Amino acid sequence: MNFIQALNTIWEKNNSLVCVGLDPDLRKIPQHLQDAEYPLFEFNRAIIDKTADLVCAYKPQIAYYAGAGLERDLELTIEHIHTAHPGVPVILDAKRGDIGSTAEMYVMEAFERYKADAVTVNPYMGTDTLEPFLKRDDKGVVILCRTSNPGAIDFQDLDVGGQTLYQTVAHKAHTDWNRNGNVMLVVGATYPEELGQIRAMTGDMPFLVPGIGAQGGDVENAVRNGKDSRGTGMVINSSRGIIYASNGEDFADAARAATLSLRNEINTHR
Image (cartoon, rainbow, N blue to C red; front, top):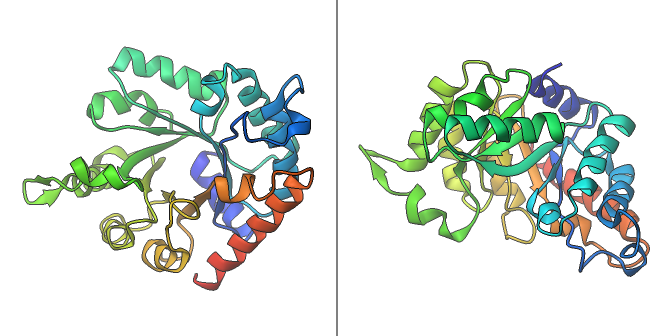
């Protein structure tokens, strides 16, 4: 089963468009875990085991592990998801993008070392930098298009021959890059009008949608503008709003409650 097939299966099985962002900061996890041999893994494992029946994906951000020198925690986290909860896809948020030979190494990092099911990539350097990812038709290639941060307007809104840069990326993704049917687009919930524009341009291509929760994206507007013709097509990420729902020993139960609440809110608008 390839990545897109796995998404379609889990959307239906768990009746969920929720993705939990596993972005643990060693300074913010509960005190009783900070002295563990693999503290970020122990934190993640508890949350994963409490939420796996409520999600459509997990999305660890590589910087939270590499920045702290805790890459082994990331390896263990992804291994645990695949072993204990098979069928739940893992999107490695790494935003890679470089010349072809370097991109090949990033492919090995994401798919061979970490064994992720998909990885986020930056298209700024062009098609040849994406090609090593795109040819992995068993894996997902999640291309930055209209990101959720305020500075997205600095470049993504620039006019490029009569359309914006983000529209150009969406068009290329839909017409050229998705020849293996393994492409997703990153489209932020903080820009619902643009979310709707990109949906109209790309048919039922799946979207990774950050920006809900701490970044202020509105669930109703995001779902109304971003859902596909089947009422799915979205992997709606929440990180801080779920993993830090409590900083006490009940953190995993609190994460489950927050995930369930978000799933139910999303489903009311589907």
